[in-house]
Every structure is written in C-alpha cells, then in structure tokens.
Length: 157
Image (cartoon, rainbow, N blue to C red; front, side, top):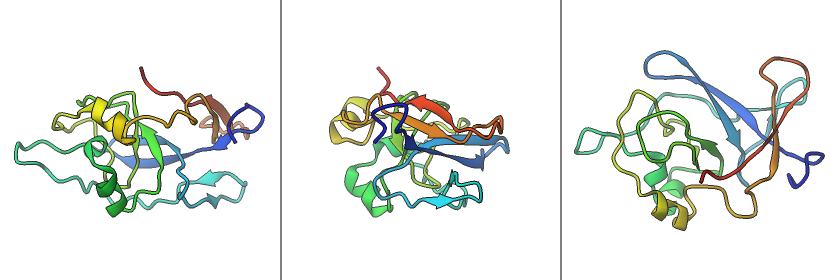
C-alpha cells in the first residue's frame, strides 16, 4: 500500500542516454496500469524499451514537455499512469512528478515551451494524487547492496 515503510510501493529505475550521450537514470513510480517484470533476483525492472526521443518541436523551435499534455493526449500515447520527477532541463516542471511515457521524457539539453504548472496540477497531470503524496516506495539500490532503497515520494511545493 505504501502507507508505511514496512509495506512500500515498488518502484524501478529506467536507464537511457541523453541526446548528448550521457547516462540518465529515471526513478519511476509505477501507475495502476504499469506492467511489472521481475529480474532473476525478484526486483522489479523497467517494462519499457527505450527507443529515443519522440518529442516533436513546436513552431517556436522548442519542445513541448510531457507535463503540458492533456489527460486525453496522454491516454492516446498509451500512458499507464507511471510518473517520474523531472529534475533536469529548462522548464517550469522541474521537481514535480510528471507522466512518464517512453520517448517523451525531458532532456537537459532541450528548451521547452512554457508549462502552466497550476493548470497541470488541476488536470491531474502534474504532481502526485493527494492519496499518494507521502507514500513509501522502494527502488533497487544503485550500490548493489542487495537490499532495496526506501524513499518517501512527495509533491514539490
């Protein structure tokens, strides 16, 4: 349920390369429709196959960030409800949980069209739902200690 550290949600890491060729690791909070695939050790692994950026450039030459898509557009893209915290890039959604759709996540080297964060929050596209804010989640430990790493997921202020 994620309500206590003893019963956490199970998140996973998604690895890719930025457009500049550097490694990028996304911490993914699965959605209600995210498929779960276990590795041989019983850890959840990414169910997504990375195929590069699919973001189209707008008329301004800037990209449209996934946080500015409507719920209808996200459903049309096959969004399963998974989110990640956008931590890099030049856009207004930094630090917020935003939808994760393979190929539509942000890149630190891209410029983005303006994002109306308040409208995205009202539409349920930006941020965690109130009942998920503060839940506990584990992810595989990147130091390979054999134990999952516990974290608490929270909305940005």
